[in-house]
Image (tube, rainbow over all chains, first blue to last red; front, side, top):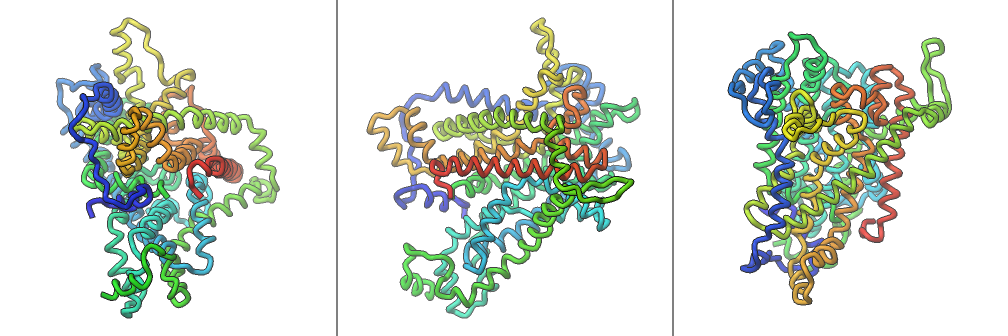
Length: 307
Length: 312
């Protein structure tokens, strides 16, 4: 299963069903200097803010103002910053990180489970209303989710749900695009004959799903879950609207709160060093997740766009 | 074994939808599998949309409470200069962002598809890396980089003995925001294009090479047409995202007070109306109107490109 959804892509594109061999690194041609130069410039541009963040995370507030923004200061303050992050305001930063984990994992796993079930239904059953339902689903991908936040806020407010973790987790269970990706994948990766055979053998629908279909979907499940978890971790508008209790904020909203505070505030509450080091630490988990799951997202991101 | 038997009974070439033979008996299970998602869809998408529309048709004043107002909120919105300015602004952003992001992403993807060295693989990761960074953090970082007190640009211009531009002023904020969004999203689109390019059968290029096509011709006349459907879909994503522009201006607003007001984008305006001024009804009308525009813009674009993209 190392190719993740690649087989799907192949079927969609290649005229011949033969396994492609990318023989393009065949011995030939001069090194492409122009291409490499372009890539080098691009790499520098995309790296610049990250490099700045790494450097800035190691500086104290006075170090941040002292000049040489793109190089380390004499004083290496990263560990001081981390210690301060863990204690400032009773360690609220750690709570924010924990909240972000909770929101991203709960929303990401939950929405993926729903997407897998729904994608399977659309791909493998022709039930009454399935065509119409799928049309509605496709249209809903184009509904801007931020247009939902204000009414959802009012509804939750009436139920007393704002300012609780549910206000952030429940709406993120919705992932129409995840359903779409799962359907596209399942349709090609799981032959109907396999399911029919299981039925003939007397396997119930749920058992067939659990023991035969799910193992075959694994690459797509990982991809959709990764995308949904990243979406949850990066979520900003929803928690910004729903949560006013500082202790329930995710790290994205919390760090921006610190930025506003440092920007407008009196001496005691200027914590630029915590904004930078806190930002640095908050991006580490996702960078690691992406590096570890490279093979999944690289193929998976194109999955939905080909059909 | 049974799998083989039934496979021969119905060859995979003529694969039909979902066990047609057993259709009737099992069809209802389709709804069983769909039900959990359908509930969430109804509660967190359909219901809020309907409710937003209902709210947008009402006004709420202290004196009179909730009252039906027909389309009054919409008339107000389309006569509201701040809303219309914001709409035009995101339309302008879309005209600028989308071609830059998609264009750069295509160029990088085509180059990366062509050059296969370790350095190319490394730069592919770096170009994609911003996608893993939350939009808020991206905006915060660029805010620092633009800042006259922290940023490297001031020292750079000092070094050249030139006056440093204020990147958070009224004149420059458009370009500054464009830069942030380009940085954030180009890599994501690049990966989508790259993955689509990778799945093209290389024998197609062989034929082109034998015919004497240059690399540029191969790229423009073979590669691009094949990945058109990917391009169309990413343009739609990019369009949807841009019209909803919120996070970056919201984060930069405190740093660039003069340049970004409370109605800089329609989404920002709706947010501020709702949460700073408690005008939920008017905010609903604005976000509903925005949602409708986004929806229509995507549909129009999809229909207009239907022939080319092969999407149904």
